[in-house]
Image 1 (cartoon, rainbow, N blue to C red):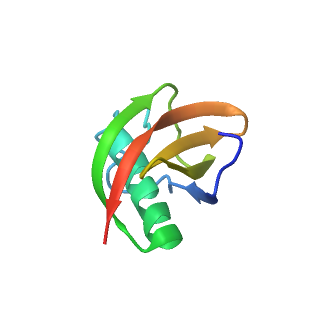
Image 2: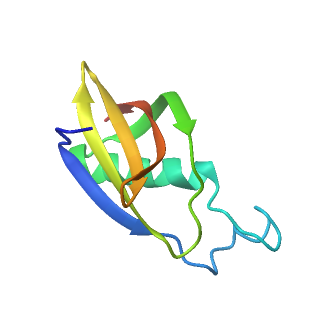
Image 3: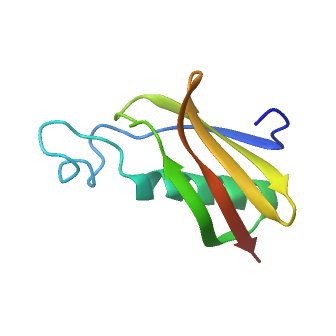
Length: 99
């Protein structure tokens, strides 16, 4: 995503209540939490709520306390997103927002 219009950095704390169940002894940040961060970024960027996830592909895990960056860009009325840890792609997809 070379022409990102909005970026946001986030980190999920190791003591977040969703982590022990995903996966016990080896916690990973659940995909739904990554999408929640995308929704927060959309709200900050456009003042919109996440209305629909058109597509989402999770390609690598995010561990607790690791910093990740969301990039959002306009895509013909929709919004493309990428989530990366450094240069590594963690997730990508397309969403739609609504007021």
